[in-house]
Image 1 (cartoon, rainbow, N blue to C red):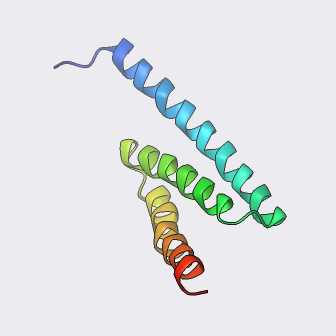
Image 2: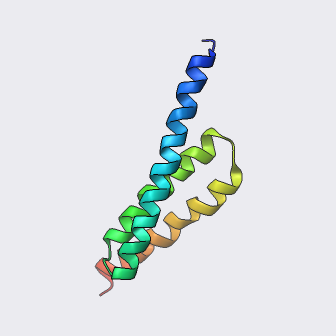
Length: 86
C-alpha cells in the first residue's frame, strides 16, 4: 500500500495528539504523586509512558523509549510490593 500525503498527515496528527495527551497525563500523575494519591499516580504515569513509548517507536526516537520503558520496570514492582509486601 502506498502512503499518500493525506495518510501521512493523518498519522502525524494522531502522533501529535498522543504526544500532548501523554504529556498532560504525566503532569496529572505528578499532581497525584504530590497529593499522595497512590496507586492512581502510578497508573496514570504508566499510561502516559505508554503513549510516549508508542511515539518513540513510530518516530524511531530511541531516547524516548530509553526514558519511558524503564519506568514500567520501576513502577510495577513497586506496586506489587505495595500490595503484597505490606
